[in-house]
Every structure is written in structure tokens, then in C-alpha cells.
Image (tube, helix red, strand yellow):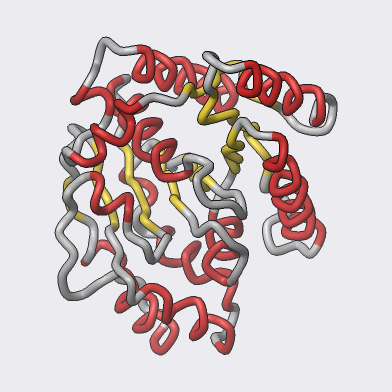
Length: 261
């Protein structure tokens, strides 16, 4: 059975899509079979791997499941441009699902039920989420075993981490997903050329010391990230020997050690 990991934080620009994409590629490079779920209506993950979006869409599958409770996620899964990585792509219509889920039976469990017949075919399922809380994010957290929380290396970002930890605790305590755990906070967008960047990373590690695990790996700011996604590639295809790819390989090693432990 796959390990299902949601990449989530209620803040834009924290690196959720880049983390989902390149962690998936790093795990696939290690020989693991990976499924990416684009659960953000912006569809940036889908665009980053040139995934075709047609009919049915992820929204269509959710809408049909709410009406029939018959899972059909396999109908939208396609190969990505990354070897050994598949994706369930999305488009802007997924915005409608956030509202429609509010009136659905067992509304928080829809993604979990859609994944149940699919997950055994994969080693990892990574879910890219919206930058704000809602039913789609709750579905991702209920479906997931673990959460990675990306944190932009800036002083104001710590509030969003605190909010995310509070939501995870609520998901656990209400019984929606009592076994959900935070795999770690991933410090991203670090600019080591500036005092502000170095201080922000140090502050983040100090702020959450003892409260939540923080990955030893940090993701530095680089133009290679945006360039690779614009080309429809992961860093492992666009700049496989670069520092950014090396960082995601290190992150994959931490994830593997954590899940195996």
C-alpha cells in the first residue's frame, strides 16, 4: 500500500507544487512508483508536467462519486513527463468541488475513498493542495498518512505553520484521521546570499524547535525551479546535477528514512 503524503500550508508561494513535483521525481529516481494528485484548482502541477486535461476531469470524478459512491479516479490518471510518475491532473472546475463537498455525505472522506482502489499500485501518492483551508484541503488531510508543510524562509511565514499544525491537530482529535502525522516542516525559498534569508531560516528552526520535526534539508531559491516547470520537466530532467536536484534527493532520503522507521 502506498504512503500517502499531503503537501499543505495555508500560504501561497511556499513551494507546495515544486515540492510535490520534485520530491515525486526524486522518489521515482530511486525506483519507487509515484502518483501525483493535483488537488489545487490552479492546476500548476498539471501544467508543470504537461498533463493533458480533458473529460472526465478530477472534478467530474468527485461529482460522480458524491452522487453514486462509485470510485472512478483511474479514469483521469495519466503518465506524466517524469519517468515512473503518473498524475491525476485538474483544472479550474475543481473550484466547484470545494463548495459541492460541503453538502455531501461523509464529505471529508471523498478523496480517501477515491484513492482506496488506486493506492495499492503505487509506493507513494503525493497530494498538492490549495493555499487556503477548505473542504479540498480537509479531504487531502483525511486521505493522507503524513503531511509535509513547506515554509517560505521569511519571518511572517511562521503564522501559517502554526495554523497548519492546529488544523492537523483538529483532524486528529475529531477522529477524521487520528493517525495523521506531520512528517516535517520543509524550509523553502532560502536565499543564502542575504542576511535576511539566513536569519529567516534560523528563526524558523528556533521557533518550532520541540514542537514539530523540521527537515534537515532546505530548498534554496533558484531560477532553475521556475525554468524547469516552464519546460514541463522536473529538476531531475532539466538540471540533474544541480544543487536544487541534490536538495530534493536529500529530502527524499529523509522521507524514506521517516516512512521506513
